[in-house]
Length: 182
Image (cartoon, rainbow, N blue to C red; front, side, top):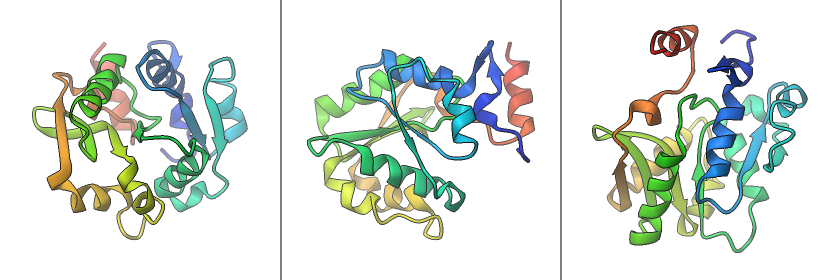
């Protein structure tokens, strides 16, 4: 996005990150940890009044894997699973988050992922059994994607019936597509 902080871009009048955090806070998760990197102080202002725990990733330039690891370091020792929800998933709905959580509670798969028409999306939930592996991921090894592929036989896809689980914002074209849908 070339110098633009996509997390602060407004969709439906709300900064993208704030909308994602609000959806997570309304869901069945026990705690919401938001990992910030680029322009952390500026971004923090968009969610300062929300009851999330904020973690600053000083190594954010090393990619999303470093943010995931920073978040993992902040979790409670008794945590049974983590739900990973990218901050740029502009249209995520609480109902999709809850479907993933409910599937995990019901079936205890090591990995549970939201899907749309069979296509892997977010959020993705990882059980405690994978925590040590998560801490070893790097961008060079394709990060979380490799971990998920290595455990695809232990993964459960949860059909959400909404393409919103696939709608992240990585480019100006992605933003235009979001605007076109309104």
